[in-house]
Length: 145
Image (cartoon, rainbow, N blue to C red; front, top):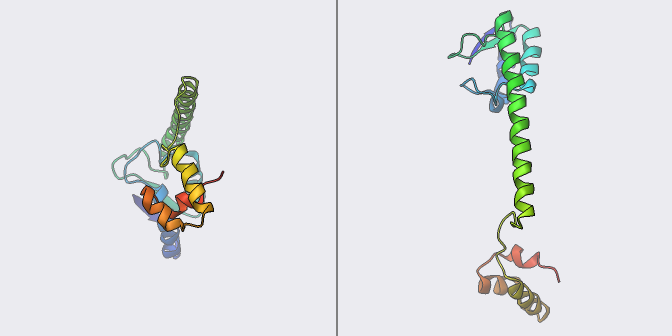
């Protein structure tokens, strides 16, 4: 990332940018060109900062063309994210209608759960029960009748 800063407050700005670094990517990708990032950089630009990607000279916010490029990429990223979200939810719905069980497989069968609950009622410790089924103590403690 290239940054050009005017003024004597460069250090506080770079501290703020370090805080935002998870949002800032070294490559120009659709993920990093979201509206949120564009708005953040718009605010920073009003304070006298400019940025650009080292490998993409047209994504420099100090020029009108660069700002247009960032806005277009941000719009595309938003549409792409919406398409991903829609396709994922449609796929989940299709899987549910086919009877596919989503999520992690249970560690214990229903018979093992009943046995573990009965052993708990008789006074066995969580650790003993968990070790016998090769699971963690919280797995046993979360069991409900």
